[in-house]
Amino acid sequence: MSLESVRAFFAEKAPEISVMESQMSSATVALAAEAYGVETARIAKTLSLRIGERVVLIVAAGTSRMDNKKVKALFGGKPKMLGLEEVAEITGHEVGGVCPFGLKTPLPVYCDMSLKAFDIVVPAAGSTHSAVKITPARMAELTGAEWVDVCEIRAEREAVA
Image 1: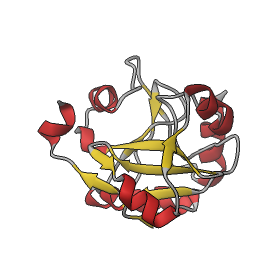
Image 2 (image 1 turned 180 degrees about the horizontal axis):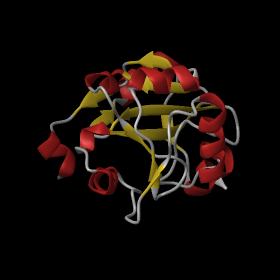
Image 3 (image 1 turned 180 degrees about the vertical axis):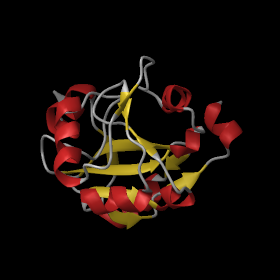
């Protein structure tokens, strides 16, 4: 159902963007980079967080790492990753396919500045075998995302380790 909700999202809001599907799993940043032929940093990973009573999504470059101090300073609380069942229940997307498109529940979306290093990024599209290619600016526009600085960039070698 999740892949369909993402397809419906793009059909309505950005019909020029098509969902790509891969025979290979793209459930992790490394697998997604391999499946879609891009470097790991271009994979736009979506972090599902609970901060106090709020649930938010933060989309960041694949090699970036969330900085808990920055998140706490910006949102006023300690971030906690959602559990597997909670992610699927709230977003409508399974872990490995979570993205800011076609959400089951409207959620605030934040795009980390780490994405601005790229002309095109590759976020998941609702399943562990789907993704889209999109500019960071267009992704933020389509999802109503606010730009934030909550991650630290890691070197490609370090990110893979």
